[in-house]
Length: 370
Image 1 (spheres, rainbow, N blue to C red):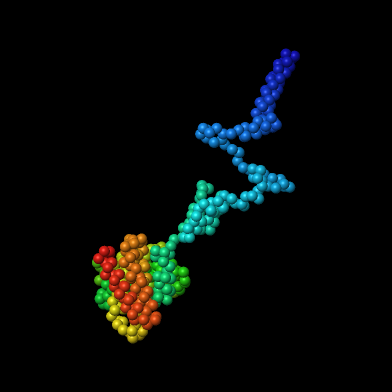
Image 2: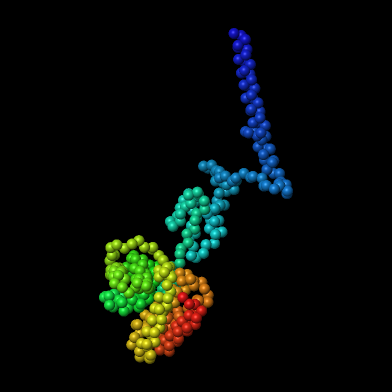
C-alpha cells in the first residue's frame, strides 16, 4: 500500500515538473513577459542588411481604439485616412476613358451593370458599346424625320412591288437595294436615342428585310415560291410598322452591326447610293426645280449621308481604313450639302454637293471593288 502511494507521488512530481518547464520556456520566449516585449522592440529597431534578398515581414496595420479614445490604424489617427482608401486609390490609378464605366465596390459586393467575380477577385469592367458609325452620332448621320420618312418610302415601294407575281418578277432586282436599305435603317432605329412606335420590333423588321434581300439576290429569285416568301415577309414588316406584332416571329438578336444586318452585302447599299445620285441629276436641273422638289432632294441628301457613314463601318471590312474613309468623305459631305441646299434653295450649293457625290464614287470604285 505505501509502496503504491510513493509511486503515485513520483508520477505527480514528474507531471508538475513538466508543467513548470513549459511555463519557464514560455516566459523566456516573451509570452506575457515584459522582458519579451522589450526584446521584440529592440529587434524592430535593427536595420536591415543591404544584401538581404527578402524583406522582413512587418506587422500588418490594425485598427484599434476604445469607446472613449480616438480610433487609430497602427497608432495613426483614423481621421487621416479616407473612408475607403483602397477604393479611392483604385479609381485614381485606373484612368477610365469616356466610353468605359468603372465601378469600384467593396469585396463581395456588386454594382448595377457589373458582375462580381465568383472567386472574390477584381471586379470586371463593363464597356459600353458604341451605337453609331466610327464615333459619329446617329443624329448626325440621319435625323429622326429623315429616318422615318425613308422607312415609309421603302415600305410603300415594297407594297407596290409585291402586289402580284407579275409585278414582282419584273422588279425583284430593284427590290434588293431597297430591302438592304430598310435593314440598316432598322439597325439605326434599334440604336436611336429617340423613340419610334415600332422600335421594340425593329430587330424583327431588320431580319425580315434581310430575308427579302437574300431571296431576291438568290438564283431562284424569279419564281412563285420566292414571290410568296417575299410577300409573307413584307406583310409582317407592314404589320410591325403599323404598330402590331405579327405571330410566329423567330428569336432575333437585339443589336447587329450594319454589315451583319445585310450579310456584308455592300453592293446593295451602293446601288441605293447610285439610285439617289441618278434621281437627283434627272429631277433637278435648275433653281426652280430645286425649290419645287425640295423635300425629295433633302431626303435623298440625308440618305446619301447616312449610307456614306454606314459603309465605313467594320461590318463591311473597311472600318478604320483611312484611304477608304478619305474616298467616302466627299459622299458624306456632298449629301449634307444637297440637303442644306434643298432647305435654302441654293442651287449653286446643290451643284457642289452633286459634284462631290460623283467624285466620291468615281475615284473610290477603281481602288475599292466590292
